[in-house]
Length: 403
Length: 66
Image (tube, rainbow over all chains, first blue to last red; front, top):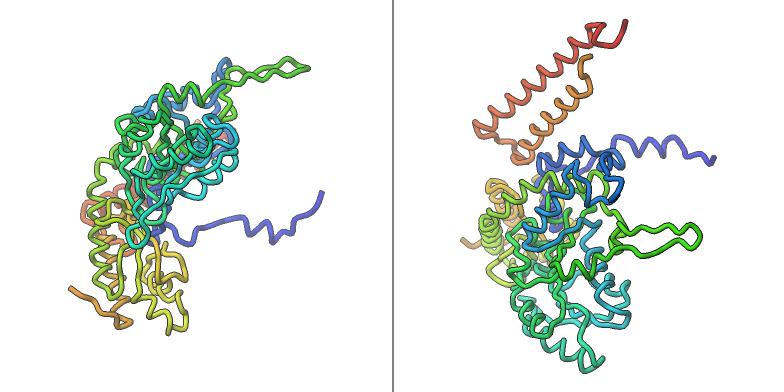
């Protein structure tokens, strides 16, 4: 057997995270909504071992979503209800949920219409499913507002080019670049007029703010457990209307040509079972916390609006995207800090260094002119601390601060 | 037989509750009076649970020795 050097093996032991939540205020744009609840951290201890969720897998319907102890099947019903949908499945990631929908609803060469700020994984999911992409443009600097009415034009374009309708239309509810919140009902209305399935990518919204898929007219709603449900990675959510569940969650029909084995209980699109073990259990354990926290969304919006106001007092600093902020993911343009970086020996890293010295992390090292941050779940005291820290750094480098 | 494993698990859970309070007070750990009271309560509980394990471990019968 090939030998692995002892020192190599030792480095895998006693791993610690540099930026634990107990030591730093973390503003990382994609991390705030995934911070575990207390119950989820405790459940990790209990269900960390491999297939620990499968102790009571029912032998006749051996499938993750049929397990009653721990209450996975019950949870999936409650999850669907909470999202205003009929059926829910936990999958490994939001992108897989998109891929499952794309591959079930489209045929190779079909189009999916997406917003011009869609995440790269939307494109890759379409590509893997053999679909082509038609983009709905946004307004560009400084708002980057997606032209929601433009979905109708793009559907018409697809019709003209191919002679048929797109397989799906997808809207990113809140985008990853500017944190712009889009009105899903506008796109739902267009999807309904053309009778094209509507997929709402709620990776940044479901789990942190109130979401009602059916009320908003979504046929498919996808989400991310590790991004917005206080769950460990990898956890994604696929939530469907009954009609879409019939189309997307069909059962396996394959039969072994020699053994004659078949697997009719298994759902094909999810390849039988998905997230077995600890990540799923963190999602479940955090669910009561999530159900409660979405009720406080307005306060989260107030906090980010407060922080933006404080940041914009700093010379050359401006929030990009639509205003006022309606989501905690925020893109900041800071010509002032950029000016400082041009003459600083650490160049763009100075801002990261200064923040880290103040126990704040999450802003990408090296960035000053444009950076993203997220305040979701921080206490008011922490948000005020962050605001003060930015202003202190600005003052230290003699940037003007207006009152 | 004393439940050593269960008691150990209980202590870890209590300490996670404490660390969650630290999380909400990062980076200055300025505790409100009710948070301070909660931390002290939890740590005293953990301390008592650790002592219980030690006492039971010292008792040969509970440690599984004949």
